[in-house]
Length: 168
Image 1 (cartoon, rainbow, N blue to C red):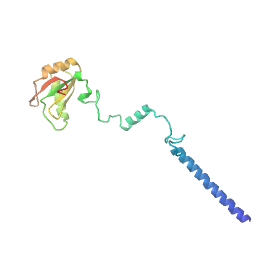
Image 2: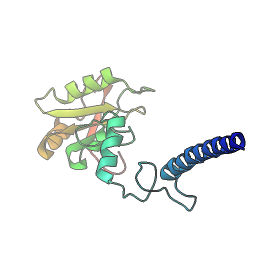
Image 3: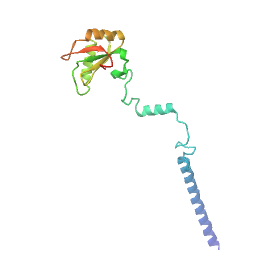
């Protein structure tokens, strides 16, 4: 009888240990994934009803993107002619047509637009023979229109005008 009782005690001990492990596993599972009624449980970073800190989220997204934009928009100082206010830009027509962006040609156009002493801050040659330039002040835009219109650039006579809806 003692042998049977001893085996029963051993079996009960094993079952109790197994149930304890299973209970701990289930507790950890519920802590991580919730109890099956929508949403995670507390005490974990997995789910739950914690409010989202948008500032923290934005910082994390910027860190993941190395602080760079996604390339879908340009803003002041980041390049792109549309990043400058319209009153500081002028339209340029008659430019050499290139099928793809040409940084060297853009640099030459910027130098050309600044050749009369104006402070051209940005210039771009578009793919269809049109482009634009940006300046520091509205007065410089007006001076560029009056002095640069009809000048030669890369073997072509360019037109420089105010930026309007029809010529942007």
